[in-house]
Length: 294
Image (cartoon, rainbow, N blue to C red):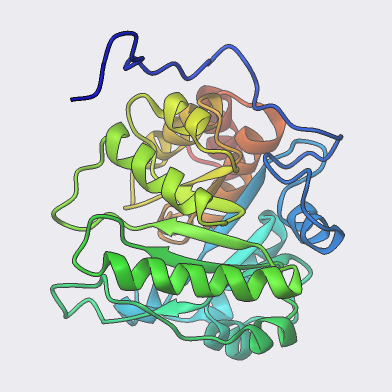
């Protein structure tokens, strides 16, 4: 039996110290990447704030028509100027979005519809050449750690990363939380670290207790998913806590397009992400711009 004397078992996330990087590039963990990777990451993350507001409307690839996204050609143009990055499928981009003035992250994984009990067996549905044709600044892959389809999911992520590395396109690894997985800091520390160590340049996950430890343990930027629709004030509070906890951005979908005032909600999120507004200040901004009476 191995000698366990002096074995360190207590974890130390050094929350008082910023992630160490060489050089002056503003994206966490990207200082040693090549020029093309840095250029695309700089399109995603604002060089002044170091953060990003992503707008996810890729829900239709497994949910079909979603409330708030029934008409992409009407909803999306209203919001383009109020976010930094558009994140959706190639079909939605090509049919319903004018050639964007914004950065785009292209969803390249796909799998079963919501009618299936197990969504974890996703495949790589978009080849790298089509991502290049669309001038994507990043490609997104759903990753199911701990699910039945974990191995195939990691294979899909790895193949996307290998292709992205060949052409300097960063991969956004999206942590998927299945029905049998708890949204705990232990799970998110596991999932985000695995995805980053496999080579993803960005990780999208959920806010949780001890979120600052999840961020500290992940060597690339974390962007927080908006998740299910929340009341606007609660969504802004979650956004504020995420940025305070070290997230480098928010990827909001339903909390924007299902809001009664989606443009104003996107603007309020941007105030938190880029201008250091508190949740209360962002709520006042939302209420004032939407002309909501007290």
